[in-house]
Image 1: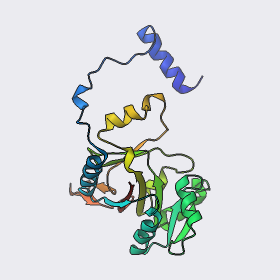
Image 2: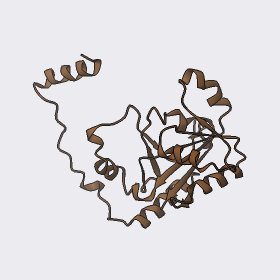
Image 3: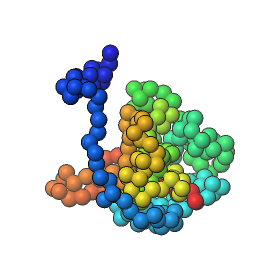
Image 4: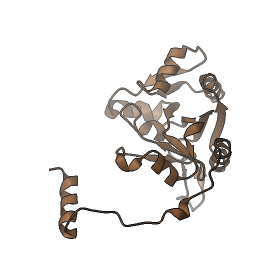
Length: 217
């Protein structure tokens, strides 16, 4: 029996049966039924308020916009997922204006020095966005490990406009989070920031200095 099951069994023994969630009234979390356009506008407003950057693209133009973003920043390389459709599409494009493409296909022990010191940018998919807070939802996988979005100076995220939800609660219900979650679920709102130094908010002190979202409409 795993440690998790042992803990759950102890809790069941104390309660005398199956574990149940208390009845809750989530009506306070309900919002107007906004259109996709309204959700995009609010998402962009909120994420740009914390120094995020949004680019509007189509399914045919997002790789071209990606190349423009990277060239503007003088990126020497881009870390991409090996199996995900995003990585496959970037490789298949064979664009000469893209920087060197890197695959995160080795254990972190062998990647760590290069990842922390040499990788300029990374690109990941997203599970969705939250308009009310300007947040991205990421579910890391072996193909898109957590460090891809947390270490490189520039993190580029691809977000489908149809996957932008009004609230976090709406996203959890629509995607049925209760049926199973990954080890790490990430909510990202803007580039890294901290107020540890003299309680002054500073951006890019640790982790990505820039968060760029390609919204595919």
